[in-house]
Figure 1 (cartoon, helix red, strand yellow):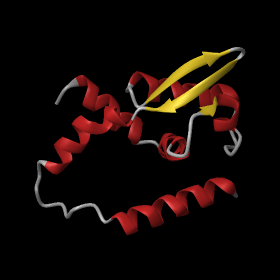
Figure 2 (cartoon, rainbow, N blue to C red):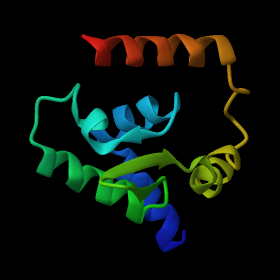
Figure 3 (tube, rainbow, N blue to C red):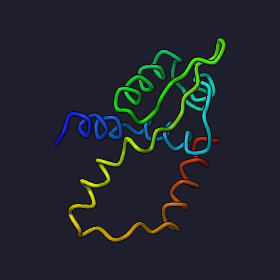
Figure 4 (tube, rainbow, N blue to C red):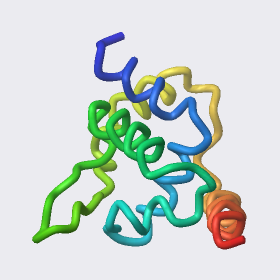
Length: 110
């Protein structure tokens, strides 16, 4: 496996980072908005964002004084291809995936 796919899997191994990616499915977000639902410091969130950025899963852009985060789903392609190469996995159940996302987003609102 390439270093890039290792970085993607390492980034995805943390629940906070997966929650951040789920939030970014909706739209680009300011760093402060990303941090809001989490009970941790902005510095801790910034470390998670740095890991996601290094893995290519998000990009960050400064717009004025605000730093924005954007999901970069193409970065997951190599990992998806690797997982699918096992051929034993069923096709993605979009209803189950949508239910999972609803649950994850609902938990972040609490």
